[in-house]
Image: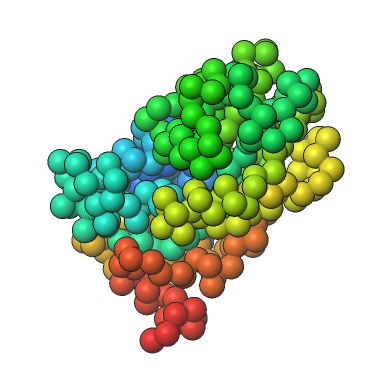
Length: 326
């Protein structure tokens, strides 16, 4: 009888095992989650969610995708170029109801196909300035160079409304238009006296800035927030940045937060959305340990419904755990 040499036999076994592993990997359904630019807060959030989801189950493989931002994500989801995506609750609600500038977008009627999964985070508006600027209040930014984010971003439009609610406009300041990723270096280099940006509590870039340049985070007047919330259909939520989050910030900072949502379209597979929702909420502690964006999140907040319908897959999970009525 012909005997196969042991080296060849071991090689064949290794090759067979490799094929089996490869086949198992290829059997996983490939999914994508749309975020924003590389290195941004949404991108980091999406990467954290993807890692936890992929570790929690082996049927699906979720990959984080860079995009042009939250508003771009809406069209990408509707065109099936993304399976799920991140956005603010405000933009999702405004798109679905064709409010403001969403009413004039060519695909406006398609927004009725959007479906919410759940709120996954609340991110605060941060108005932060160099201490040497002498600014101590929002009204005090007059005459100063303040960055408002890129004109195509949601945050830029939000900041224009915030200025208006405070009785200000871009005519009162030297308005900058760079991204959140760029603003910290620009402030450090003295290009701007401060910025108005939405980012998660304890963002590394913000902490690094405050460790090298004395910074002040401004409290926002509740009356200003109330006037602003009229524009946003009461979708803004009160928020307090804990004391000690940034170097030199010894007191809590009162501001408002933007609820962030994960969403899809009406045609998304129910079982896939169910598995994704289940994996997220059953691993909430691990998410919070990896990323401060998820800290303080509760299932009661996550399962809140507004006017955008909840996808049946997410609804099934929340009904199972009693978060919403059956």
